[in-house]
Image (tube, rainbow, N blue to C red):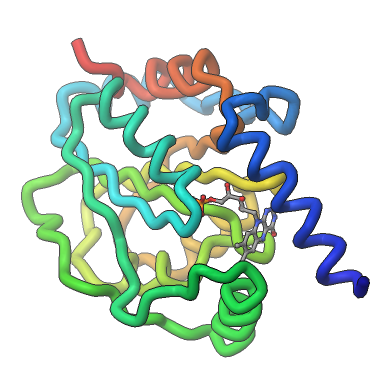
Length: 198
Ligand SMILES: Cc1cc2nc3c(=O)[nH]c(=O)nc-3n(C[C@H](O)[C@H](O)[C@H](O)COP(=O)(O)O)c2cc1C
């Protein structure tokens, strides 16, 4: 088995742990910065939870966030769907990242009525899937707040946030969160941002 296969098997095992709801031991979110300011700025704002998910973990996280925030939800789907098969998907994901590709999205979200766009995704090859960059370039984010969240087999969210900041124009970024199955941490993160529904 080559290195890539070994790495992917590890990701798969950790990812399955998350899907089964027992992924509580991996990395925790870093504490929110300027909590009071973020609470003041995001409380009462109109929220969209936009997410991409290949195998369902990020979908489950997004649906939990919807339940806790009362925001609207939108699933980002590829116009050319990713294969169901793991190796074919990892190969395509790797190539898209290498090419700095912008895979087309099926349909289009109307962002105009939202102040806060929560953007959820699985970590693919240590960063956000390139279709997230398509999403970030496909609408007008100026003046909006992006709240990133992810699921992963263990990789941190930090690199993806740094990369997304280079892609999207005119938006500010609030504290991101990697969901590892710990609902209490998710609750604390949303509360720190002022996003828990009243
Ligand atoms: C193409 C691909 C690449 C991945 N790369 C990473 C990675 O770099 N680091 C990591 O921790 N997990 C990685 N994973 C595991 C996923 O991030 C993890 O299983 C995630 O929870 C899947 O979310 P989803 O079910 O919403 O697709 C990768 C999975 C796939 C399919």
